[in-house]
Every structure is written in structure tokens, then in C-alpha cells.
Image 1 (cartoon, rainbow, N blue to C red):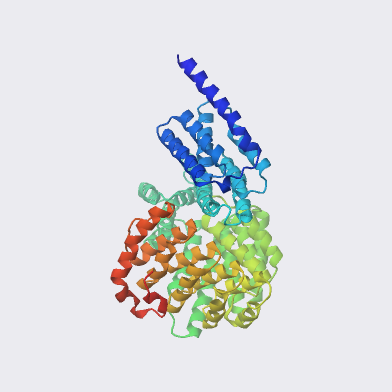
Image 2 (cartoon, helix red, strand yellow):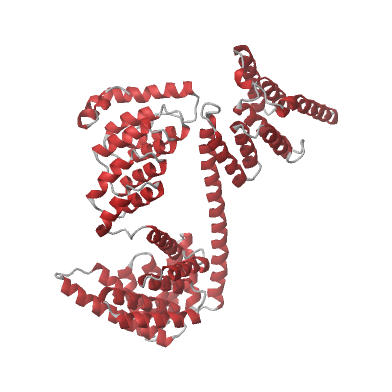
Length: 587
């Protein structure tokens, strides 16, 4: 009996495939339906939804295909059809990849229709090919004439968010798995050779990257108590405390490690680091006092790092830190001999450890110091290439350095003395140069930046306008005039990304009268803008009234009433300080 029923369902399925073929193969005029045709298609679609909710997949398939024969341009019906096909494929009741082939045929028949480009992107995404899917979503957006298929823009935004989320989750999963493997391997290394300090240091770094600091503290506290006369364990206990930001608690352990073994390179390295840390928190009455204290500290730290290297010529951490001290001495005091010593030390270190990321990192700093930009770029890239997953701070620093070098090759370095240069470049005819000049203002605390930013919000290029909003954020331009500018961008900018970014920026303001703009943002035609507006509105108002940015227009309109009522109730109190006359009106 089951076999008969199954065969009957397969027969229905094949028949519906033949029935659907005509509107797959030819371009229908489904966008010009009469009201009765549209109502009939809608009724069949609603019936398909009911069947689908009850897991009656074959019945749902028949109804949605009937709906699409009447209106082949309804995106929601296509999405339901795709989902049903994929479910049947997963259950083994349909050949694998058949849904993908059907929509590939759609695209061949309608190559210039943004709807079918978008639908092909969706089936690619759903079939486990998110990269290809996103390419087609982007292509559909560039083709869309807005009136043709207004839902493509919101679909692109939704799938882009999911795509980024999926990619991030996959990376995080892989990272966690790699960290777990490294942690287990290094833990075993420390147990096999309990006095191998380098193995313990690597193990600590992996555990810190994973975040399980409490267990690490307990382990090394127990080891230092079990072996009170072993310098390595005193050092390792102190290192855990220092990595956790508890330097004063770590200091006695480093001192004890040095007392137990004056030639232990790790203890000498730690003492030198503490000398430099003390300099960071010191206060001085005059610049002369500061300069004298810095010279003494650099000399003392350099001496400790040299002793660590003398105790172990292969001690890379000491080499890297000594090179940093020499480079800072050369830069701070114009000491040419210190720079030569730094270069020689790094040449030796690169020979000893050609794939050590910290050596590449400090060599990059040295080359950048003497304006050898190309060589610095190569070193920073090698630092990224050789750094392990758990060496996150070093990877981040190398990435930032590369970004800075890229900026240096395009514009002068961000510096208060270069404001006049940026003011000239922000008037360039090239929008890329205008955007780069605005971005440079984000690094300069100079009031002269406010005027070009206020002009850039009306720039004809969307990238320049987006950059202007980002720079306003970096400069902390959270004052009334900025709120008015952002509010008007939210309400009138032609680019949905600019409107969304303006809404998000308004969420940083404490002035509750900016809710006037955000409430109107809830009625925007674009789902992304509505999402940014509701998030910002909840931050500004402190309220959490329900509003689904992806709901139907009627549902959104009903939810919007609650927010408008809240505004009307408090408008008098909110709008007294607003410089925008329009805010006095009801949204």
C-alpha cells in the first residue's frame, strides 16, 4: 500500500513538472495580471502555505505550481517552491540537484530579469554554494530597476547578513577546533618535558586565546607550590598573572625566578619588560626629567635583554624586545648607533629563526622607520603568514600596519600638520580621493575637519557620504547639528546603505528628539533601513515596543502606531532643544 501511495505521489510530481514547463520556458506577462487572476494566484499560494505548514509537501507543491502558472513572477511563491523541492531532494523523493537545474533553466530563459537572477542566487545559496549565490544577489541588485522587483534589495540584505554570519560561524568553529587540537598537543608537550619553558609559554598563549584563564592560573599556581625551588615555575606563574593584567602580583614571582636562576632567559626577559611597563605609568614634572628617565629605563631594559640573549643565543623573545628598545631609542633620541645595532641584531635573528612571526613584525617596523615601504610590507605579510592562530594580537598589529602602509602610499600620513593637504584633496574630482581624504580626517582631532565633513554628506558619490558618516562617528561628532544632518540623510538620501548607516549613527545620540527621524525610518521602503532604524530607536528611547522590519506593510503600520503614540505623548519635552523646526511636527 505504501509503495502504491509513493508511486502515485511520484506520478503527480512528474505531471506537475510537465505542467510547469511552459512558464519555465517562456516569458509570461505575469506582471500585468487582472485582479481576478491575482486573487486566484494568491489563493493557491495561501493554500500551498497551509499544506506546507502541515508537512503535506506534495499537495503544497501542486498548489504553489498552480499559483505560479497564473503568476510566474511572484518571488515568495518561487521561494516556497524551491524550499519544497529541496526538502523532497533531502528525503530522497527527488533527484539531487534537480531544483538547481530547474532554476538554472529559468535564468537561461530570462537572463536579463533581476527576479530570476535573484532566484538562481537563492537556490545556489540554499544548495550550499553561498559564494556563487551572493554573486547573483549582487548582480540582481545592480540590474534591478526598483519598480520591477522591489523585494530584491531587502532579500540581498537578508542573505548578505546570513552569508556573513554563516562564514563567521564556520571560521569560529574551525578556529575553536584548531585551538583545541593545539591546546591538547601542547599540554601533552608540557607533560612529556615538564621543564621545557618554551612549550609552557606556547601552551599558555593557546589557553589565553581560548579564554580559559582560571584553569591556567590554578595549574601554574599548583606547579609553583609543588616545585618551589624551580625558577621556571615561578616565572610561569608570574607570566599567567601578567598576561591577565595583574602586573603587581606577577612581579614577586619574576623576582623569585631571577633569584633562583639568575641566568634564566625568561626571567631576565620578564624583568626587562617590567622596567618598560613601569615607564608607561610614571609621571614627570618636566620634559627633561621624562627624557632622562626614558634613557635610564631603555638602557636598563636593553641590558637585561642582552643578558637573556647571552644566556641563550636562540632566545627569540629577548632578541625581539631588544630590537624594539633599540629602534625606539633611535627614533626617540636620534641615536644612529642604536639603529645600526638594531639592524644587525635583526639580521642575525632572521638567520636563526627565518619563520618566526615576531622577527618579521619588528623588521617591518624597522623598514618602515627608514621609509623602506616595500620591504616593510613584505615583512608584515610574512608576519601574518607565519603567525599561529593563537597569536591574535600580533596578527591584528600586522594587519593594522599593512592598512597603514596602504594609506601612506595614497595620502600623507594622518597628521595634524597635514590638514591643509587633506582640505585640498577633499575637493578633488575623483570620489575615491575625496573619500580617502575624509577617512584621514578620522585620525585627526582638528575642528577644521568639521566643515569638509558637513559638505561631504551632500556629495553626489554614495561612498563619500558613507565615509563622512563614519568619520563623524570617529570624531565623536555627537551634537545637535550632526543629528539634524544625519536625520535628514535618513529621510531623503537616495542610497539605502547611506540611510541605514545614518540611522545606526543616530543610535549613538543621547538626545531623545532624534527619535523623530528614526520613527519615520521605520516606514522606509527598504528592510535594511527599517532594521537599523528600529535598533537605533530602541537605544535612544529605552523602549522595546514590538516592530518586525520584515513584516508585511499592514503589520508594520499597526506596530508603528505604538511608537507614534509614544512620541506624541513626550514630544513637547523632547523637542525643546532641537534646532530642526521639522521636529516640532508629528512624525
